[in-house]
Image (cartoon, rainbow over all chains, first blue to last red; front, side, top):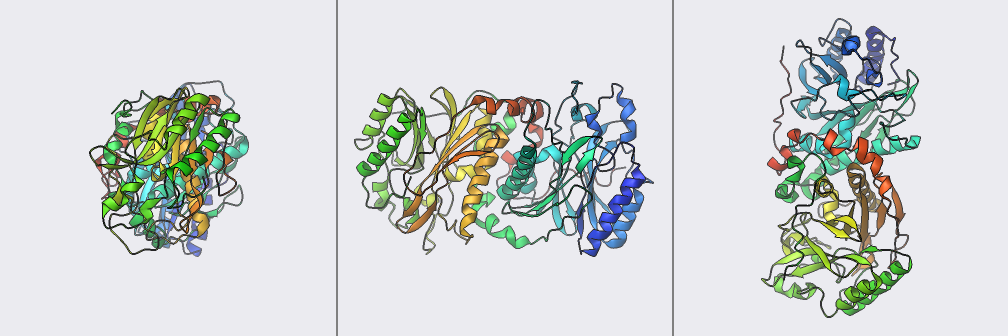
Length: 305
Length: 305
């Protein structure tokens, strides 16, 4: 998707999503993945000292009067979809959330983002990344839902850089992972990467996640400019072999289409990445026992006879 | 390294390693990584119904009379090294092992391979992959040792395709990971990949492991032909940004040199991949609780009010 400007209304954005949805249906698509925080501009770039001043960016119900046309049309067309948005719960809790809607219009599930990047406090940067200020960490973890007859793992944006995301989804039988995102060209605070790096690191992340877990990845990002900030785009379809088979060509609203074929995953799952045969969880303990870096604990056997 | 033929002696192989070691020292290198199962041909391609008939491929001591010249010369030159070989313990146990020797000649540690690929039984294939027959799974896990003043994580070959390998090493503070390997062009049993795929998947694996863990990877493989089987080569130095900065150009014995610079990792570790800030182990439990694929267990929140 092209950028969503701060002044753009929900109704306008939903109109753009409907155009993409119709185009997808006409191409025979049965599942559409929309980006992260699709319905508004990527507001975590703004520092608002009073959190309540951001309330207008959150959805209190889904579907809402403004988003209902998307849900209705998807059901009529028999297309399932995944949509990211900022969620405000009835209790006033804030999450970076994804909703998954099946081809019959039923809600298959929700996901609340686990890996919130950036920072909590203002940093006086031209472009901030305040997701840790605007959202709580999701408490449920990474779900797998049934969409269009496939087992679809849900994750969003920064989750795609963490290998644990894909592994936890694959271990629950995911056939593919749907990932919406917003990634600024400037990188996260503390980095001033060459512009091409952000695309390279995005593609490396989704390709490795797909390959190492024998699953498809559908990655959908915003591109173009949002309020003067350049987003990387790079929406793509990745195979279980780690190949990018379709990728966005432009920086506006665009449909990127791939054909799901379960046979691509089969030889990998049967042999090279046959988890039941090859994984060794007895040696993975630190992954759950530690959060940050620590001292070596594994025996080196040095000094043995 | 180029291939090692079945008839080649330990003494001949060690002579080749000495040439590479001298060349490395003359280039100012302080750490050299040699391949997996460096001292012999990759014998797990052969089916030997009597396991004892393979005994000649294993080392019973390290250093041995044939390998001592490498240890001696490395100490004189002040170069540390990592060397893969087949280990036979005094109790007759068999492991695919790596020894790490520091610049002063002291043994810093050993690693016994965790992710053994392939199969246990004969399959009547032109090229088999019988590591599960010839080796036991290492019991210690992935160690981090001190070499040339750096914290070096040890892993080997197929370990590089498993994201857990790098993560467990990074959580123990590894600055770089040394990985020897042997990868045939033909892939593992059950696959007939296009020849280029094996290189692509190798590079994807080591690049993602480096990037997602903000560490350097030194990957050293055999190339050329071994007993008629083509190996992929692709020895390389990978930065914590996931960039391949040096790579083997040929298919024979060759020195691939990189310059370790801790600054490359620093911005990643400070922000994007600051484990202490961003990792969420409470959502990674399945990684250690499950080995193979299973049913979804994470709550989807569908049906909530």
